Amino acid sequence: MNLALTNGIIPESWKEAEIIMIYKEGTNSDEVQNYRPISLLNNDYKIFTKILANQFKTFLADWVSEEQTGFLPNRSVRDNIRTIIDTIEYYEVNQQKVLGLLSLDAEKAFDKLNWDFFKVLIQELDVGWQFQNGIKAIYNEQGAKIRINGQTTENFPINKGTRQGCPLSPLIFIFALELLIRNIKKDKNLKGMRIDKQEYKVRAFADDIICIIENPKHNIQIWLDKIEEFGKLAGLKINKNKTKILTKNMTNSSKDELREESGLDTPLKIKYLGIWISAKNNQLLELNYITKWKEIRRDLDAWKNLNLSLLGRVATIKMTILPKILYLFQNIPIIRNNNLFKVWQWDISRFIWNNKKPRIKHSTMITPKNKGGVGLPDLRMYHEACAMDWLKEWTNLQKIKILTLEGHDLRRGWHGYLWYNKVSVEKNFRNHFIRSSLIKVWEKYKNYLYTKTSLWLSPLEANQRRLLGWIEWPTYKDILKKESLIQKSPQIKDLIEIQKNL
Image (cartoon, rainbow, N blue to C red; front, side):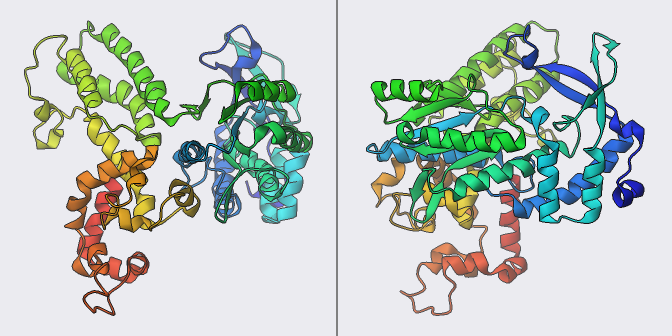
C-alpha cells in the first residue's frame, strides 16, 4: 500500500476483476444494456481503496456543491425530492410561469467516465501527491473477466469507466460530475428558477440528475448543448430515449413543439429516486402510497397461507413491508388522513391473524417487546417521526435554499408558525402541500416538546421579551446560537435525544 502511494505501483492482482451481470428489474431481460456490471475485486485492493475513499470523502464534503447529495456525509436524498416537490408547488401558485423538469439518463454513466478527465481534475485541485499517485496507479491499467452461467471469459483490457463495486467509484464519479453542476450554476444563459437571492437549477444524486428549467420551450436546447459539451470532455453520453422532461403550466401544443425540438418525451409523470412525480402534487399520494400498498396487499395475500408463527408474521412485516413504506415516509411525509393508516392496519391484522379475529389488542401488538408487547411496527408513528425529521429544518433554520423555496409566499419567520400560532393568522400557510402535512404533525407534538425545553431557552418566552422588559432575554436566533447554554441544559439534552430518535 505504501508503495502504491509513494511510487504509484500496485500489484498485478489489483488490476484484475471478475464482472458479474445484475439484471435491472423492470426492463427487457433480452437486452444487454439492461444488466448492471458489478466488479468482484480482491479484498486487499478494497481495503486500500476504502482508505483512500474515506480521505477523499472528507475533501469532497467541503468541495462538492450542496446540489449533489450522493455518497457524502450529512447529505440526504430527501433534499432532492423535497426541492422538486416544493418547486412544483411554487409553479402551482405562479401559473403565469412555465416549468420544465429535465430528468437526465446518462448511458452507462459509471462505465464510460474518461480516466484522463478526472485525473487532470485531481491534479489541478492538488488533493495531495500521495493520493494522486494512488489514483494514477489504479486508473492506469485494468483488466477484467466476465462470469456468466458459471463460465469465465478471457481477460480483456479496460481503459475507461469506474468499477461498480470499488469504494472509490461513486466518489470519483461525483467528483467529475461536479464540474457540470458548477458550470450549470455559473452559466447565466441557463435559465432556472429564482426566488429572492436564491437560484435553483439542478439537483443530483450521483448520476440521477434533474434540471429545473424555466420556459423550457425556448431554453431546452441551450441546456442540452451545455450537457453534451460536458459529455464530450468527461466521456458521458445522454440517453435521449430514457431522458424525459416533465412540464407544468404548458399547453398541449407547446408540449408538442418542445417534444419535436428536443427529441425528448414529455410524460405526465416521471420517476425520480424511486418517487413518482407529476405536475400536480395532489397526485403524490395516489402515485406512490396507494400504488405501493396495492403491491403490498398482493404480497400479504400470497403469504397468508404460509406456515408462520405469530412472531414470524410480525418479523415478515418488519423485514419486507416496513422498508418499502418507510422509504416513502422519509421522502414524502404527506399523509394527512389517518383513515389510510386504519386501512393499512386492517390489512396487516388480516395477515397476522390469517383472516381470523385478533386475539391480542392492537395497542399491545405495537408495544415494544421490552415493555411487554409484540413489537409490530406502528406505521402511523413511523410516518409522524419522519415528518418531525423534516421539521428540523424549520426549527433549526438550516438549509436556507430549501426554506426559501418552501416559504416563498410567507410573511413571517418559521418560528412564528411553529411557536407563536401564526398559522391561524396567515391562512395561505396551509395552502401548500408540504407545509400543511408537516404542520399537522407539529401541532400534535408541540406541547410535548415544549415541556422538555428550559424556561431560559424557550421560544415562547423569547417572544415576550420586549413586552415584559426582559432586555437580556435571548431572541429565537440567539437560542439557536447559544450552544454553550444548550450544552449546560439537561432539558435541552433530553430534547436533542428525542429529536435524534424521531
